[in-house]
Image 1 (cartoon, rainbow, N blue to C red):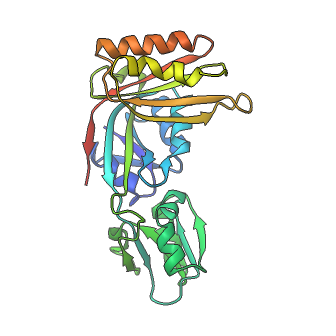
Image 2 (cartoon, one colour):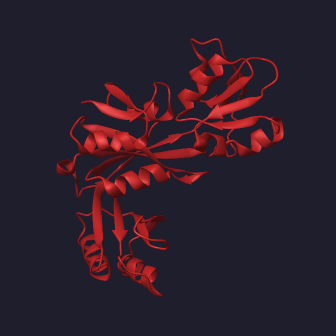
Image 3 (cartoon, rainbow, N blue to C red):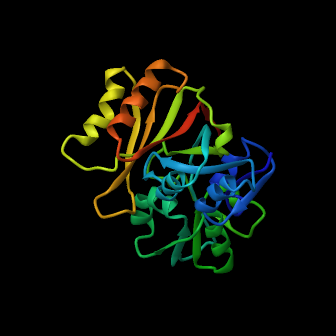
Length: 268
């Protein structure tokens, strides 16, 4: 099974993708990962969707909204950042925007004058650091292995509990109703007082726990939103089917996308 994820090799996405299959290929963006699955180029994609410090990964949320794909697994992995570089002054710290945000307190304290350079991935930050002596990267400490970089500092994330959720994306025909969690995308196509309450009440009425609710601009007009909803229940359950049906009634002028049900796995 071919798996595509954010590259190059050595990213946290790569580490998560290896839990799906060893045949991992790389894309330059999360959007390209999801598109490759939707277009049938690969059988699975692995994308980061939420970090415990920085929150939702907006590019992933938007890609899941726009593409016809399913979510079949959730991988949760601890994130352990290190500063990689060469001894001496650090003029620039390069990494993925999420990694820079997850280490904000360390950078403010230890390298307040260093420029923070956002690049496509943590591995791209390592490549950048290898090119220039006064550039350091934020990445997993193992990313320094086999390079001329050293680990200047370890455990630099702002919280020791730092972790990222990755979703395994599959073609729509692989969508399942089995699993302990379900992801939905809801576009109500309307805006009035109490709308969000009406969208969420069907879950509360059936004792279904909401684990995440996040809004993203629909792109249609200012103030118009799409809602990403995760619940602690599978679509195989009658209560979940009834709740989703009620949400579909509320969102009659829009739509509800059932990304699928899945189980959670923890990957070290």
